[in-house]
Length: 295
Image (cartoon, helix red, strand yellow):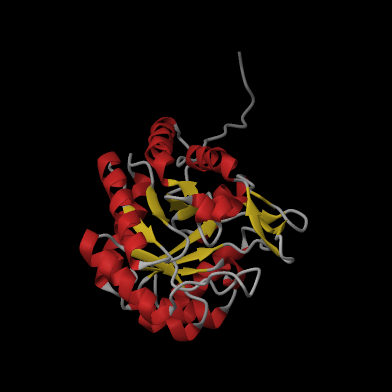
């Protein structure tokens, strides 16, 4: 396994047994330009450094699973990885980005510290094994169609490929055709995967294909105003990490604008979440005594 990734994994995993609140995976949904990603990384790192949070910077080089073929996808693998590597070096922060095909994993593993498996692909064995064999940390998002128990199987596929550095991420469950709900019980049940638990507090508020476009067709909508609600819940329950997409101009974001959190409010929200984490006992199992109560 990659020694630097193992060191980072041990650091992130260790937060679950210490008084530290949570780690943060955050950044704009997709690489729009080198200038934009560098600026976002600069601002987000400044905030997390001030608050004492471990940051892993996130952005995608290719949004391959968009609702519409007309949607913006990003710069692609080669150019996107060059940009992410510049961010990593310039700001000395680890990187997380997603893959959609097994053939991408080796190249992505040369830059990213965490390889993310999209929710739609969480059971794709060949993709999981290819990601695992890079030696990098693998973050598997729970499929919107999956029970939380499935994630133990997905995590086991990573371990059987020789990589112990795995974590799983809740990102909502389909509720009808154009909506997702977050079941807080999943944060507890997903611990059966025996690894760090991450809450995606932005994608989980998507309304898939729920927004009609003026020129015809549909795109994903979202409920940005409920991001604090889901984030507060996740932190109170005791997740190990928060995944949050952040943008400096969400109304003009080319992808997933309705579920990206405004950069101007990031510090304020994180301060509140840290305060919740410090008083919550969510990471500790409640010891229930069922012996008869006696006066």
